[in-house]
Image (tube, rainbow, N blue to C red):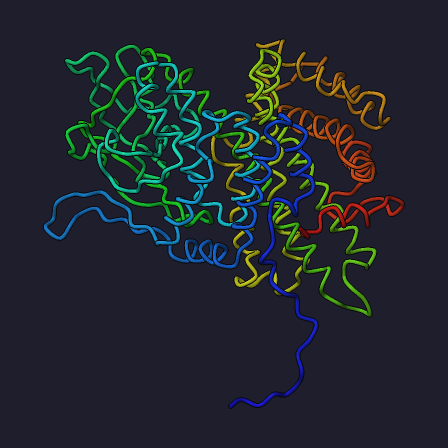
Length: 544
């Protein structure tokens, strides 16, 4: 038996056995704010149940195991026949099944569906972000399929089902189905109009044969995929089923799986089509317009996913500093560490508040809210996802050397943190999309100004930021080179207006001082010392 050289103390207990949802004051407040009061008791109970599951030691272990055991590609069976399958660790299936049963693909079928799903997505991301990809794409496929009522009637009940059926078989035999998406190609990347995959019409109306490749296809074991290809009439959207109606496998050749920086539990594949059967979705030549609603919904999920990662990073940092002692006291009580934690907490709360506001706009569905989404989604996607990596890195540093060690879980958050900025259009794509909304859809800017104007007069720094933004928008010379700056300012002003209206005064005051008033530095932990930072940190503390 090993001897003991000294008594070990001052160790931080793991952050387990808590309700991830109710411990998040910013998130619970947003849900209560945006939901119909008649739904509130039901939804709060539902989200609390998911929060308790997310905080449970066993479920957190599933996330660790799924990440440590990435998927494996099997192109052929023992007889040399192509099967093109991906094997996942059992923990992946447990996570994905729990996500489906928690309603993460069911927003379109339930009242208040987008707010309740957004909150659940933000909570569930904190366990393991990888399974969010098929959940997100399945959810987002619904509006694209609705361009074809016949296809929507066939597929929507399966996509919004809360039953996870992992078997590859004809969709008509399944109680629930998952969807993926394949747009980008080697030669084009974000420029999908450069796609060369061809679609040849078949005898049956609306059916085609695809030939070509896709450079990124995530969740390749899904039941169906929305794919862009060049038809005789131009770039068109298609539905590619994994298994055909007669039970045979569609031609869906998995060439290899990507070896990614993070998101390792999720399979991302390179796919070849060679006589692959497909059904047209929407009109020929209008593929981008058809699939754009799916893209918009997945972009909002990028915002939610980043907000979830930031929240978990901040929760871990505050939890650590609450328990850890150094230099004669708790770390959380040290003025400089408190400044760092408060600064991180501001970023997390601003992201959560903005993300839930956008989800509420989806639930409303009115013309004004749709116009707001047109400009606010790409701006939020640009800015929130950009803020995620520095938050994750700084939060890991709060744990010291322990935060650099895999067992802490912080390296997994750091590796995951850049992902949402890249997926569904990287930063430049989002910033240019903001410009398109400004130039082509005047109703979008009107809706945005009406939204931020609701907080006018409440904080002079916010009022000044709105005035400066209008000045920038009035000068369109060299606007493309300023697109990132505009997207950033649009997102920050919107976040500030929401926090001024809805957050505690200490949070709104600190955000406006540092993010809008110029009284903050380039690194975290540079907030004015005169602010009530203790209250900001206490609000972020993960205590149910």
